[in-house]
Image 1 (cartoon, helix red, strand yellow):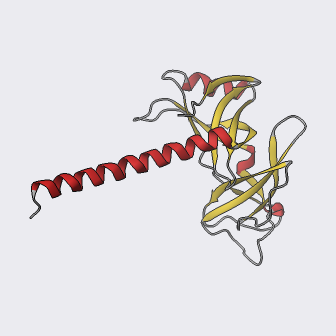
Image 2 (tube, one colour; image 1 turned 90 degrees about the vertical axis):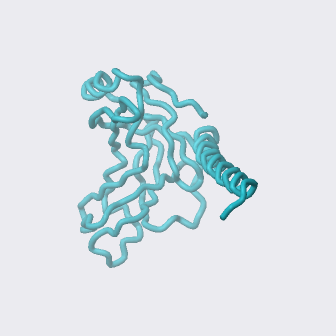
Image 3 (cartoon, rainbow, N blue to C red; image 1 turned 180 degrees about the horizontal axis):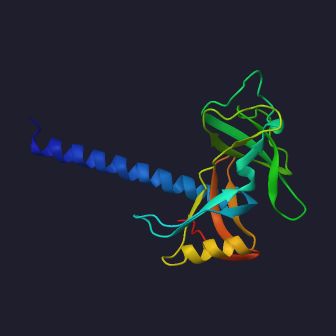
Length: 192
């Protein structure tokens, strides 16, 4: 049986560990937002509302559909297995970034200055046949907005182009910095 001081010490250690973990998550996200390479990506609407966090805009991206012809390391695979995919993006003259190439293994060479790498996830079973596409998610498919704004934004997205400004770190992890309506920032994420 634990004595009073040991119980207090154990509670303090557990509390410090929980606070350290939360701090690590927050600082990691803030570091990406502050220091990550900025990329602009076209969006496509999906639908809003989260019971616990409120209204959100569900986002899809042009870069979520990857042509199998640009995947460099398919080898003899017929279908995908669940796991990461590393997508190289190239900035276009209009400012938006599009898929240049992709691989299932993290590239060992440095990313060229005119490109960015974003890490996505694919599920099992996508066909890797020539001329097909596979779907990828990047962890940036939701953007939370003030309550009551989600439906209106979703409707506006069906009428004209929206995009997100994202920050990507050296490992390809992306965070949304801002939701853009044309060139206007509708909502910007605070660093902390």
